[in-house]
Amino acid sequence: MCLGIPVKIVELPDEHCALVEIDGIRRKVGLQLVGNVSPGDYLMVHAGFAVEVLDLAEAEARIKLWEEFLKFEGAGQA
Amino acid sequence: MKVLGRLNDSKLSMQMLHRVRDTATRVTARLGRPVLLMEVCGTHTTVFSRTGLRGLLADLVELRSGPGCPVCVTSATDIEAMMALARLPGVILASFGDMVRVPGATGSLESARARGADVRIVYSPADALDLARANPGREIVFAGVGFETTAPMVAAVIMQARSQRLNNFSVYSLHKLVPPVMRALLESRDVPVDGFILPGHVCTVTGSRAFDFIGAEYGIPAVVTGFTLVDVLDALETLLNQVLINSASVTNSYRWVVRDAGNPRALEIMKNCFYPDEVSWRGLGNIPASGLAIREDLTNWDAGRKFAVEVPPVEEPPGCRCGDLLRGKITPPECKLFNRKCSPAHPVGPCMVSTEGACAAYRVSDTSQPGR
Ligand code: SF4
Image 1 (cartoon, rainbow over the protein chains, first blue to last red):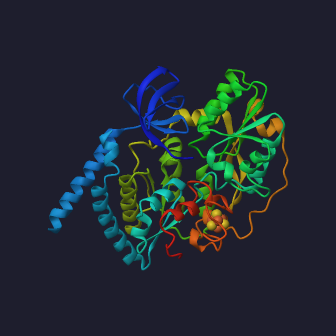
Image 2: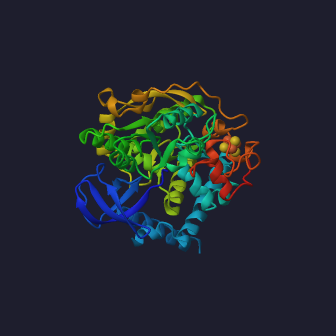
Image 3: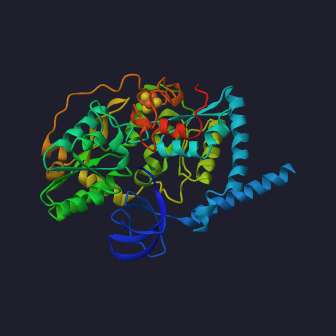
């Protein structure tokens, strides 16, 4: 029941609700707990409500950091 | 979207796993024993099982589950109370799916339904509000089970019911708070945990700072993380390095989702609807200010006050060790009923029912996990 799902906002019919796509099915997601959002933003959704807006650039940076670190380490060991 | 896929990239994860194993090897050498980490969140328990990570680290890292599955920590007495509510004439009890199969003393919500009670499974508390709109002649009671992740959305729904004057909707609040139970666990000193993996989605609401006391007051490191392979391995590497250098900081490794101060809107709406109250946890007993009661000005939407059902206290099922499991004292295979009398088809305790229950998770892959 605690599963959170990252989803992209497809449409914003009103300020309280976003339309998103989960497994190919359009669903309504409550926006009462997050601030201003725009179509294209990503949300963490739990039980039909967005709990946070995702910072995908931060995720990307974290992945990059690991890739570089592992490359550097691999080179050091070779 | 691409980046979300890369967070579960198998090649990157394998390389990260090598690195994590290296660090874990150094930690175990320093400690002279495997390092003992607790994953507080039930979803992390399932990730460790589903991905096989628990088994791949078993020689170096001993993982214990904590009190992080909201269905599992709900006491048998509270389940009986929900069944009593469901049996009241005119009531429709709406619940998350995981809850309905958990056995109380006289059955479960599912068996109550088989005997005529109107129990409906909902995906969201908002669906329960829709039920109230669609059934004006009935009383809709939502079984409010969950931690800080769930409580703000239930609060939002209660506020909506008030503004739309939906007086046939109410919530039976069994919501619980994670920081107080962590404190109770640490105070008991039951298990010598070397580091904590903190519940990522609880922290979206509370913020990572709500857990700073674990390091500051108890000297144990902790890390907030999410549920992809990269999230979990990144957090393990961070946590193991903290153990290695004897650091007791609480780190937020889930910055793409969690803000250090949490979600102010969610915290605000939760405060407007609930107040902290002493509640009973399965396996841990009563803990002060560890639950959320509905505020007096919202009595109309509080099923506890509206219907005032009384049930006698119920003993936990004989032989079931969910309590010890939720305190991190044992792993599922150490329960004598595990895989024998207790299985997903015939669950004895909640930890075998809920998708986030440790016993159900251990069934997925690694039943051969060494116990101690
Ligand atoms: S195996 Fe069953 S009886 Fe044993 S602790 Fe788990 S849920 Fe309880």
